[in-house]
Length: 233
Image 1 (cartoon, rainbow, N blue to C red):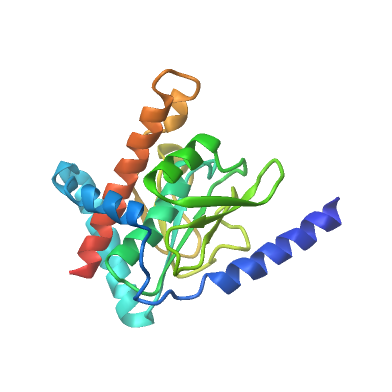
Image 2: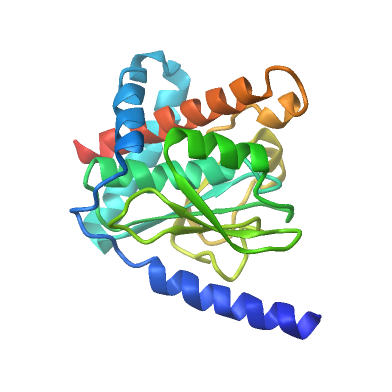
């Protein structure tokens, strides 16, 4: 069992590295995602001033990395890498494509391994992403597409130190308070920033479950998009 997992892990790492190459500037988003982000742009004025300060800090660092290295890696980090960090990763790739910013690589991770939550998957699907399961287990692997002309994001729960993620010269973005408090130092990060979001897990099994997940997805999309709008200026 251990040997099979090891072989599977190696194969997934090789596959991930092969598809996470720099995307062309001509990447065209799915119409549903493009429309979703057009609507999200209208909500920039609703982002609190204190959060805009942190988002601007991230944008400045992204721009500096792109100017010097021509590429930048971002790891969105949450304790279980099951909901908010995945949303951050996916919206980073979509936002970069929306503003035609090449050289952006989005990743996610946690401090524990669980699984990409089904409710979070449903929320990103409703936003326009196309999700396809590629490996079934207690921690399934998925291909998540945001464009017909771009390689998919390989999504599954992992620690932020997982071999599939960059280990140095990346931007660490903490998407939950627990991870922010328990990871005061993220080894290898050139910048550590915190944009914590309320956990939609609190609505699991409740009457407003779908609404809460969709609201969190929209909030993360809006703030990530705002960040990349500053990069594009």
